[in-house]
Length: 89
Figure 1 (cartoon, rainbow, N blue to C red):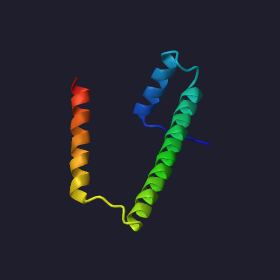
Figure 2 (figure 1 turned 135 degrees about the vertical axis):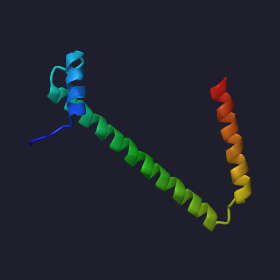
Figure 3 (figure 1 turned 30 degrees about the vertical axis):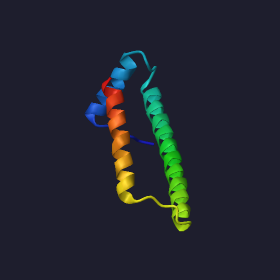
Figure 4 (figure 1 turned 120 degrees about the vertical axis):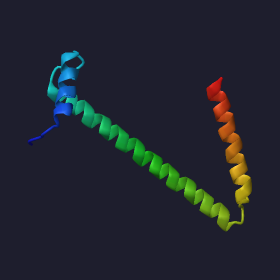
């Protein structure tokens, strides 16, 4: 496999090797690929979780268990305000 990098990426890879964190350019590239694998795994898990939550909502809706949209947005605004207060403390 032949891989070409931009000069900026080559410089970054070399700086990682020079820092001593990695013994070779191959180790830097493998670390990057592993990180990509982890990210993809997390994304897939979140996507499946979202799909399950949507199905719970659809099933609740089919049973007539719904909340008025205005109420939902009001609750979301309250949660957002609470989080903002927590992060500013």
